[in-house]
Structure formats: structure tokens, C-alpha cells
Image (cartoon, rainbow, N blue to C red; front, side):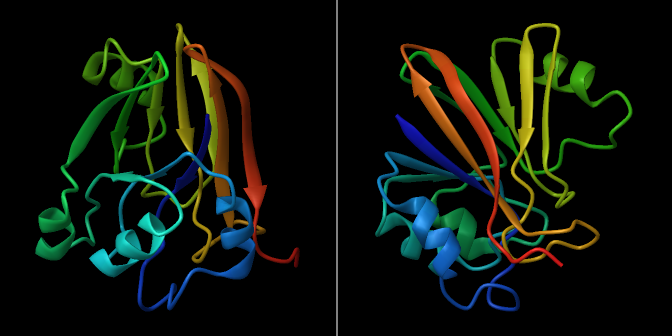
Length: 166
């Protein structure tokens, strides 16, 4: 199962339509996870044209994103892999322990908010932030996450640049 992970697309200011390098990553996706700050539900509709979408609401998401079906947190099973999603995982210090307490059964916690890509494992739980494909802030490039899940295991985890290097 190929899963594309996005966060912090911030439409329409930063995402007017799916950027071609992001669209390239979406090809062949079985599922798209969006970790919030879509800002307008139309982005989720656009993404749903590529693959099924599951999303959580971010601090910049309005009622239309909630009406689309994005809750504040989400727990799901991806081919046997227990996954939780939240937009804001709080400050970096103590984050792994905080996510373990919040989502004790999750093998993987996907989050956003910081725009800083992160792939970190601790105490049997992996926390993953794909960064932002459109608003890189202090990061060198915009990024998305690409996960491969097979038989309840993360076979491959990548943070993929989708903007040119500076």
C-alpha cells in the first residue's frame, strides 16, 4: 500500500492547485493522509481525485474542512498498521512521550503544524511529520511523505522534496 502524507498546504494562499511535483508523488497512491491546515475543503476534494483521503483538522481549518469529514484526531488501520493522526503534536521537547500517552495503541503517529519534516522512532512508536509541500518556512525545501505499508509493517518511509533546492 502506497500512502502519501501531506500537511500544511495552506490553500489558497500557498496551494492554488496541486503542484506538479506533488501530483507526481500522488501517482499510484492507494491512500492520502492530510495532517491538517488544508485551509479549504476544496484541496481535499482535489486530492480525492487521486486516491481516497483521510484528514484531520488543523488550527487554520474552518467549518468547511470539518464538514468535509476531518476530525481533530483520527485513528485508523492501514493494512494492519495502527496509525493515529493529529495536527498539532505540541512542542518538540517531550513529543514522543506525549504522543505515546495520547495514542498508546498507535504504531505510527502522523502530525503537522510545524512545517518541519520529522521521522523519529522511540519506545516502539514512530512519529512522522511530512513537512509542507507549499510553505517550507525555514526548511530548505517543501516536502511530502511517502510510506509503503505491507502486512502491518512500514516497509519504507521517505520524506521527499517537492520544491527546487535553494
